[in-house]
Amino acid sequence: MEEKEILLKVPQGKKAEWNEEGYLQLVDEEQPKDITERIKTFNDACLMTEGKTEEEWSEENETEKMDADVLAFLKLRIICAALNEGREPQFTVDEWRWYPLFLLWTEDELSEKSDEWKQAHALRAINDRRTTYAGFACAGSDDAPSNSNASFGSRLCLKRKALADYCGHQFIDIWLDYCLPKK
Image 1 (cartoon, helix red, strand yellow):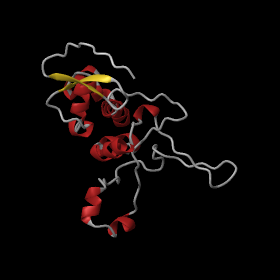
Image 2 (cartoon, rainbow, N blue to C red):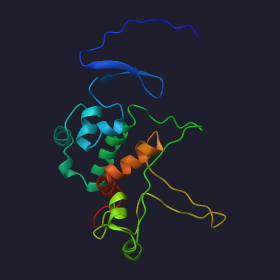
Image 3 (cartoon, one colour):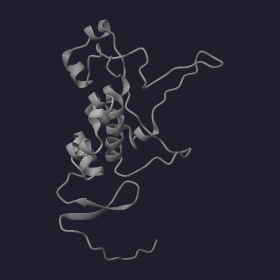
Image 4 (cartoon, rainbow, N blue to C red):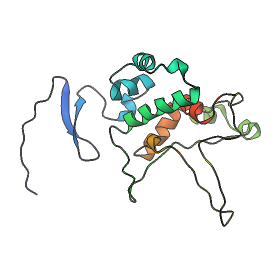
């Protein structure tokens, strides 16, 4: 393949580099390359995708008037967009899309687990939550009892499994507000 040389003007403090999808993008020189090192909070995601702080975004969107699950969904959309670094799902047959996996444990099951295991798995108590319909998974049966499915909003998908795992752990409290609203 023949290569061509092009000249780009890059702003001070930025550099041009190729991303995983093969697109040239501008990134801050001092930022860590891995997105999980750059997006640790909702504020980080807001700054990256909206160009605003979390406080500015909340004021602009009048979030105090929203139900917790609606607010959580809007936050998760921003977080997933930031973690995906601009990649949007194409919904093609060969495209993989990932979501965090959540499990509900009984008190008996948890009593057998160590404190270290519980901490590593980002466990949260859900005593004050509605659990009759979790909202993040469902099972159905059509012609055979073995059929099942899981549904999630397509705007909350991530481009890699590792990002879905990170998002589920790092932003567990926001996912909890989305999936299991308080009573």
